[in-house]
Length: 169
Figure 1 (cartoon, one colour):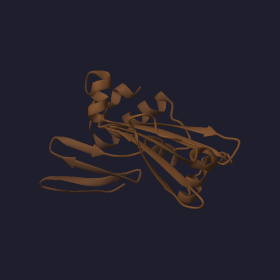
Figure 2 (figure 1 turned 45 degrees about the vertical axis):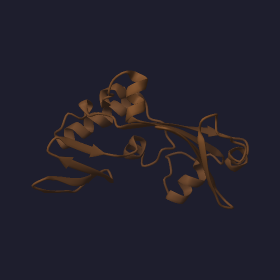
Figure 3 (figure 1 turned 60 degrees about the horizontal axis):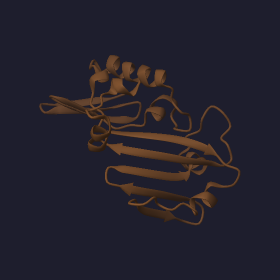
Figure 4 (figure 1 turned 90 degrees about the vertical axis):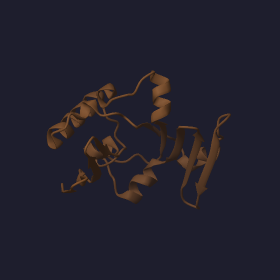
């Protein structure tokens, strides 16, 4: 991985993801499963999350377990009997959520937003093939991916405090 710096900080890449460093902060936006497995078809265990954060700390020389979590995304893949598009077409946003739907003839993604929370549904098999992000096992034919993202202010309200990386395991 590479790194460049100047008087005000620096930036670089770790496992293909950009890191921005300033005097009192480090910003790293990445998918932890993609850092470890190069795809998010696989679900990480809590031990894998801990190990990855420890590896960051070691590689960067910074105690990343104390880093504040600015947003958190959980995802799960459901193996379906029929193509995910058939299920996605039936989804409706829960009350108080705003639904944004982008479709074309072959794929579809639904986003449902409510303040600092986002729900997302899409065809994971199609997504993995398009991005060439294959797991070490045969990709199921019909995977419906569900993701929920929580932004910092909502995380603080939910947990009553700022989350740090060590709270993830």
